[in-house]
Length: 289
Image (cartoon, rainbow, N blue to C red):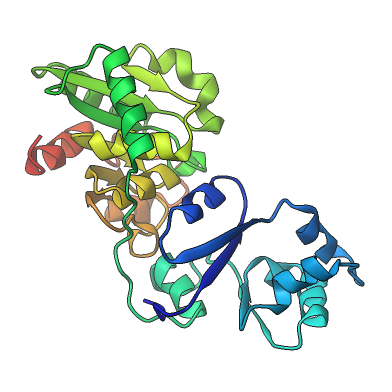
């Protein structure tokens, strides 16, 4: 944890801003896509007094982006009389969890499980979503996320389909499939498996995950979101290391076949030989499926 008396400002982009705005520790959010940050790419940035104040008012500035952009690092040091602390992004270079690495960068010591609170407006959206699909309060929903940031981290589609059919054969169950932008072109195929959503905001996805009875996904941002809202389920790992990348929070079991991955380090994706659908179903049963 970090000093609770600190006032934290976060500069981020995309959905990162939306997430940061809801964190009670964050006093203010800034967009990295604003013109102010674009000026930092100049060797002699011409900032207005107000823009310069963004960087000089803080006791400390921590930057990961500046580590790989020398001109940004130089611009920040030119603007500020006090030090700018820059670090490389975590890419598995240390034998620790990514959260622990970033926490140590800012002087923190204790990793706490993340917890995202679904606020009233998200809850209202969720109730409307449920009602529009004709689902009742007793409907048991499994959320699947078959995508990931890279093909090598994806479990075989047929594995997700088998788990979905197994779940659908049970009483009063529904299957919901969350797709990211990279998987939108797959939507038609996944509609044969269950209800598909591919254009949700991060908070709409979080709301659905918070109500899911079970979750199954790959090593991905959605799986981290599932952990942060307390979901139960299974996360599949292939080439990446759970010790460094597993979701924190929730009740998410990790499945990885270390022996197979050692023998087939360059396998393109996680096959059913590496992790069988029956293994996933058994893990879900242990979680009370």
